[in-house]
Image (cartoon, rainbow, N blue to C red):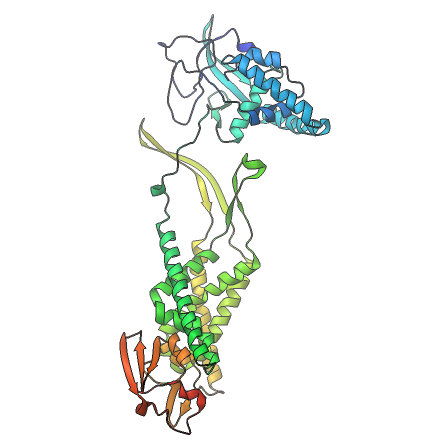
Length: 491
């Protein structure tokens, strides 16, 4: 479609781009010339057109009070018969199937929008025209009361604006302002994946999946041992599954990566792409997270606690077991309360600035800043983990003055964290400490009895040890039943 308002029917048009100079070499035309665009091109003798599909035309018909198809046809210069047929068929469909009360409701809403656009926004169509006195700048409000029949095309222009096909820009001059609309720009170019920084996110996701699968594999292996031992294990050691298994089977660097990903989640607000009205418009909306999501994300912060407890175990020594549980609980509770009380909020700052990189070649414009996370929140959560660990250690030292500390097993087969976390009260016989095979898997020790020998594979050192039946002492009649299938921690 190429509409021309009634008041412009007798004019000769030179151009419609306010950002370009008048080209004297171009001939005068009897149709509206192309409007300005973000591409910056200055074409001549190019007509301004629009595409009116069935859905959009139906929306326009619902907005009009009494559309005059004949008058609308007279203003359309591109393909008047086809446009008239489409408009007539759509009008008949609306009058047949849309209830009058619903149609009236649409028209009332449309009238309010029209008055706002006409009187408040004051969007005008702009063209350079030729008259007897020379060139002049002709302007016409899209919803001009004197151009009642042009309202059909005005709504088509407005719907293009709503869908992002056109832009509305206010130009400020020496004598006043002029608000006008651009030509249509269809964005059909796919986003270049190389310009989207997804590398770090992809790597983190792959590493997190690797961590999950390793933990799942170790858990399955532990379950096999529990079934094979018929439950003759130290069940309390399974509480330390995540703490011990992660450090032994995965290592501090990857666990630190998982901890940092949890910190990023807690320091970032959630945005969801919303497309109401059957996808007519789309926008990002900040949705509050579910309570269980916040609690689970807060628990993931304890991976950082595991690393701090493990690294500091050299200094904290016998106090490690007591203060590690206190720090675990305090970090989980405090971070969850923090997330509930002061969730990270989305912030938008509109500050349009442009800088000229190369004159007549490149201009870089920044429309504003959208912040979905906070660096201060990120560092604050890490500081929370450190503070909770320090406070928990101080409390544990104060309690040590009135309470005794249980003795930890001493064996090179055990990882440092396992030495402080595993229970040993009922796993000692005649001065020899034992470890059930399921708990041994947590600390990286896989055992397999074969004939009269026990083969032990230590994942930490990648070495295999063999203990004969005589050294095991399993033939002792006084040996408790739960120690018969256990591993003696002998060097």
